[in-house]
Image 1 (cartoon, helix red, strand yellow):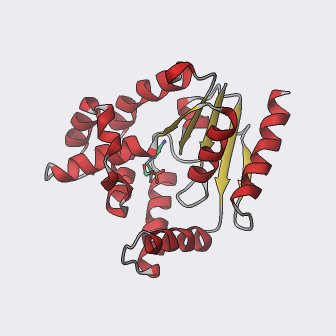
Image 2 (cartoon, rainbow, N blue to C red; image 1 turned 90 degrees about the vertical axis):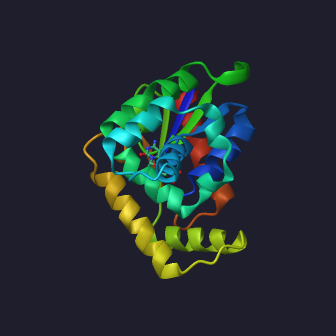
Length: 211
Ligand code: DC
């Protein structure tokens, strides 16, 4: 079984996918990390993440151990990821790895959970379960701001808000596999839900699709 979980930053995808992984024992892939690793490697090489040639070379050479770097969680890596994600050659280079993970989950897992922007529409359009999480920009920015503070980072709310807005616009506006809700996805607005509430709503939908 493939569970596709798409949506913008701060909508609660990460927490939901962790809870689903625990519940079902499936393998989980945070596909944003692939784009973050490409973006950060391009930056570290002194190149511009909007340079299609530099970004595609990095994407084609990406190794799985690059996904373990804690620096991938930074907002700088998130912005660079969004920029390289708008380059079709980068998306093409990362596609096989994601599809292979979905169809042959590691360690004999009976299913895969993929978290991203285009899983239900482009990477795994055949997924049995598609969820699209969303929440208002204000709420998502507040969540991100609190998360940064709790990790001891200095953060300015207005900056977090503006960065998120810019990233949303780029991810929705790109021509190749833009972030959007698949026609057969369950659209879940998490603005007024806590993590257990999101999990219960998702589980109800998954049961309706699989029993
Ligand atoms: O989920 P995240 O915040 O780690 O994603 C970082 C960026 O990577 C996101 O703004 C756009 C890009 N991305 C993408 O284009 N496609 C995906 N499937 C996942 C992420």
